[in-house]
Length: 85
Image (cartoon, rainbow, N blue to C red; front, side):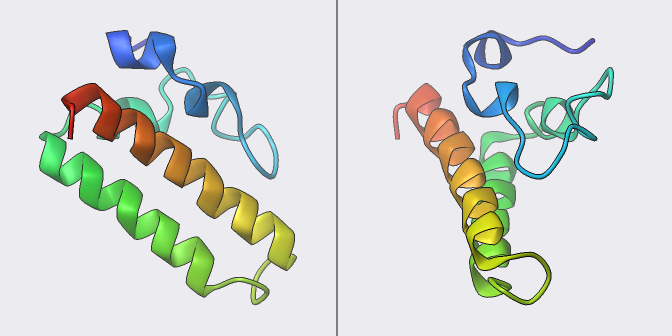
């Protein structure tokens, strides 16, 4: 399993909205994204906040979509805190 200091301290990584399909993987998608350059990580997490916010109510229930956006926002906050931005 890919481990980083940030993964060990991540609140976002220990939760999942809408199932356990990512948490059940040996290597989660976030583990891979967290190996990218910081600018790409920030862009990925920002993009997912935007995606879930904009599709609110069109795929899942509105509350679930906003919870997913909030989950990615928490991850973005963790990444930004780590780089001191």
